[in-house]
Length: 434
Image: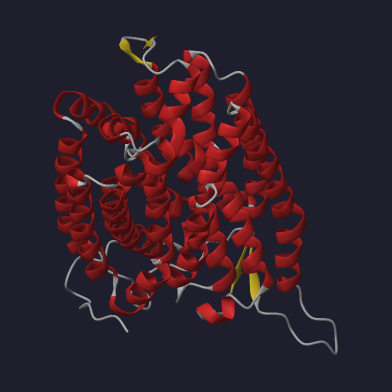
């Protein structure tokens, strides 16, 4: 049931997509801007990086693990009210961070921020999956790109405010501003009514002909294989996301000057801009590719390149431009999971419960967040980041092989017609061109 009136707001699906993308931009700093606050917080309170980074893990856990509940509300009452709620909560979260004088308060702000970010993220991605069955990978990728690249424009402003006015002021100003914009844009969002969204395009993409309820989905083995794949790839990317500033500091390149064309900056600022741009660009790019060559094929290709990117960051990324390039390649080869996995989930389990189902798979990101402290422990034990990135390379290769040699054959078997006398598999159709 959708409580929103059909004529309450325009139903142009591109307007829905744009509004969703901008809302995602407004929550990007909650994750991708966090790294710039870690060392300033530690300098003030001396809690230690590992204790402060627990807040990042809490944020990711609450951001992801509550998305299925938020998706349940979206699937029944429409996206507007859920995104409005998210905007208010996001503003409250960073206001809490701005006044936190204890780890418990910092952790509370992280938990509240995760709730707000998850409400916005899960809703906007789920809405794009429903409106764009014909361009599902691209639409989900473009929406997720707002979250991946949204922090790029504010890297320099946030670092500047932290430097000149303090990190507390940065938390407060950016938190309130982001929340207000989300509140305004939420008024444009609505789910498609029957017949408003176009059917799947004529391409060789397996898409189910039925809608699986969430409990049906979690009873299938493919879901749990996808869950483990998502967890492994997300963990390696989150390690870099949470630690990029400390990594740069440990490599001794944080404040070294770099110049690109007419732009002069420090290594960390330039890396932050490049990382977020490439992270965002990866999502629609590989989503678009997957709409044409298939989700599993795209996963296999990009995760192999991702393995190489982690290896390079851990071995040759210790000079300013090498750090910028290799860290950027890491972001470019892990950000696409937020378009490929939701699209594959909806292809496999249907569109009616897309927000809830994709949200359940998205909780793998929360599970992955608990591996971030493990990476810090491994780095502390070995004295370098090299071992951490070797592990990340291996897991990316493992996931690439699983996509191509496990998931793809399993989905093909579900799409194949049954042998006479056998029961039919769950119906999945291959949409092909003429």
